[in-house]
Length: 364
Ligand code: MRU
Image (cartoon, rainbow, N blue to C red; front, side):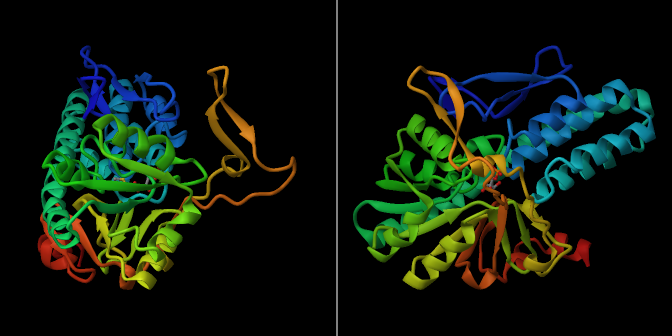
């Protein structure tokens, strides 16, 4: 997508072939800065500290991280150690393990001298595949939005949570891809953007992305979504996901579950944009099986923003010493999901196996 007229992906290889460059998402929307990642440690830090975030982009960064690690030491032992280090950075999303396994499977049969280049090339392909997947999600989601807009006859109001836009992927986004496509097709669409405490990915990233593309939107505090739905201000919800079970349980940013409950209570369709690599075919009970990341309490105790002097800084929102818990994700049971928007088309909550039969069979 474009930033001030220049087309960007969220991660791209450097011309010297020895590093990758990312957009530092901890600085947005106040500063647009890019960062060069030259080592396994750089990549692991970028994921852990959330310079990059969003399940598909975490997967892509992990793939490049493995390649950067192999450039320094391509032995079997180093490959295993790099895999473990990267996998431990963020535990909830499915795409990281998927991408690491893909790259490791590609390079393990090769002689060590060929591994780094092969890993770098495979990481690039994973990025291209992600862009194609998200483009297709946009295409299928566009049909859904077009139908909803025809029923609505007027501006269509879509609510989204966190950031599942191009910044969370390599390009296009998942939940936002259909919205960009609808906007570009001339459909009148307005987005309610949940701020998404504690890190405010909605207020910081989704609102910035939508604004850059000219999509009308309004930021609301997380607690306002139920009210908006009761008042008939939301026609449909579209969210992303970090890991979805084969049975349709959706793990996504903390607060997604309560949005799904409110949508269910108010008869608002609740759709989940879901790339194939985000499906975990090995588990069926999301609540029991998906590890929920718990992050540092300081993210709840503080809030980041731009001061009047123009600095980007954190301020305290709790009294010193107030304990805080920071659950980063929650699980929305399949019964609260209206349907999935995948690269292979739309699916009912229990219909993922029919869209991806070969992946279901491989896991059985
Ligand atoms: O903690 P984050 O910012 O990595 O969480 C991101 C989300 O929850 C997104 O909704 C999810 O990764 C889907 S991204 C296309």
